Length: 180
Image (cartoon, rainbow, N blue to C red; front, side):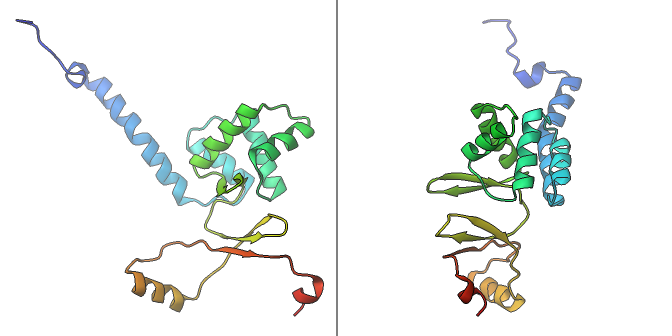
């Protein structure tokens, strides 16, 4: 239209609005950088990390975190739902799934993708897994590879190794095999 000035959204925003928008866009990145800096090794660390990230610490979210840290095992969303309700902590399916997604996407809990579904656990710093094929149990283990092996891998691939996770698979040993 003649005489009509077509202004873009940016042109129409004042300096104050633009500064607010810029700060909002920067905040998640800064929060994620803070999240990476400190490993989560306890329930208190997990709760603190939620606060650092600006996540609301709802009653349901606390229930889930407390259960994962007390159980010290990997569980499906359904198992988490069942255990919480057995403990008298009323929580809905949807709330469990939404909280698990939010917590795992922010690196506060671990999510393991398996062919039979996702499993959630409390450990989020670098570690490896021993997968028992008899029981489907996953055990967290900390493995430190020899420096020479890491250097060999780096030379073969041209990639500088900064972190690694190893998945071991096997069957339960009976007592006589375990002592050998």
